Amino acid sequence: LGASGGFGTLFSQVLSKSGIKVRGISRKGSPRSDACFNDYLSADPCDPKDAVIERVRSASVIISCLPPGPCVRALEALAPHMASGALFTDVLSVKSGICSAYSELKDKYPHIELLSVHPMFAPAAGWQGQNTVSIHIRTAGRSKAFEALIESWGSTIVPMESGELHDRVTSAVQNATHAALITFGLTLKKMGYDAGLAKKISTPPHRAMIAVIQRMASINEPDTYWDIQTENPNAASTWQHLQEAVEEVRGAVEEKRRDAFCNIIADFKPLLEAANAESSCESPY
Image (cartoon, rainbow, N blue to C red):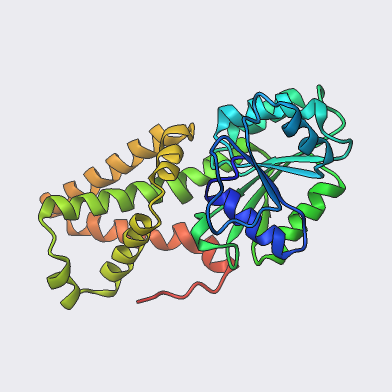
């Protein structure tokens, strides 16, 4: 569902390479040129007609690449027609709402599996070497097989116990990260940044930051960043922490409090010790 978008296209590519029949449904009239669907139907899954229902009845897995509201409406419209043991899953970036909706609806549709996954990357990046969060609502064989497929494409499945936990963690991993990067890029614009001259004398940290915001711009999926910033229930507190952090650093600099400034940087080490203990993270510097 939502087959004409980035993740709909990506799933069509990797599923077809895995030898699986892939049928796309989207309100948009045609799939992208690089999509690999066995067939594609232009229709509204939230208001299913016979052609949609026929496809749903024969599907073992339904992957929703729809926004939150349409995703829930599609589930309610399609679940009565899904086969026993079939799986309904989504790829939404914010999980509290959708997982809550699944929990409320699971007793109404006891014949289907419900799994919420979050690929932690833009579709253009591909699965290899990436992480995918998995939240089990009601799962069995189809969910396990679907997770195994994701791992066969090179992604690591990371189980999480709830949508609320997911959104707390991603408020740091995504909201704070994206906010800092977008703010950095906007700061350069306001400064009248000369990219050509800066490149000639650039430092490793600067090149790393520039590479990331270049990637954000080139992928050209600003709606993804917008959805994360506006829909995560922890977004407001994350922005508040970011503002407080900027003011704390600025205050230390303007008031010439060297020790306070140095302590801010020194405190990063204990903050990140758990991550360092679990991996052999190498600095690009």
